[in-house]
Image 1: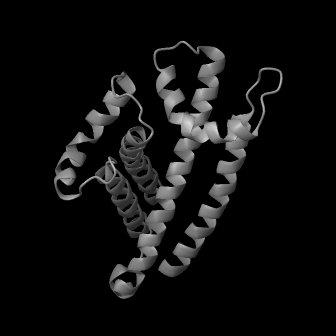
Image 2: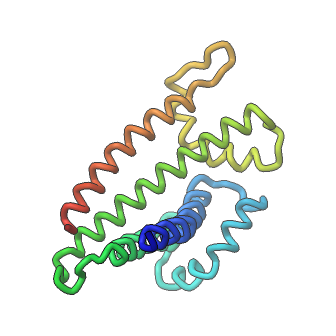
Length: 191
């Protein structure tokens, strides 16, 4: 019972940290204006780690790779922590399981990414129905635009209703199924 509670807390805490790092990377990639409260919050929450890592890990094509690396490393730490709490025999396993842990962290990062994208599309849909003129609406519009724009070219609006979020939900769910298979494969390498 205590182990499950600790695993839950570890998932929540490190999941939130990894999400903040990924959102910082994604907001820069999606060219979201950083002059809004949501973006300023993400920057302030992640600055403690991003600034020092940025000195070592340079950006590429104007992208903040330090945030993406920190997201991945947080998921790797989460994978190690969850297995440690589950009494994984690290000493007996040796270094042969390291590729499995690296692959598991990659699958966890991909899964986190897809769930965040799913949440961003969902928030955008709700905001567009409830309060499209909210001060935060342009931020979520810019965050969901890279996902919805390609689908809006393929899926026509019907009676003025944009059905591209439904297509996004379906595509993201299909990708989550593939990532779950990758996670199972990585866990097979670990155990």
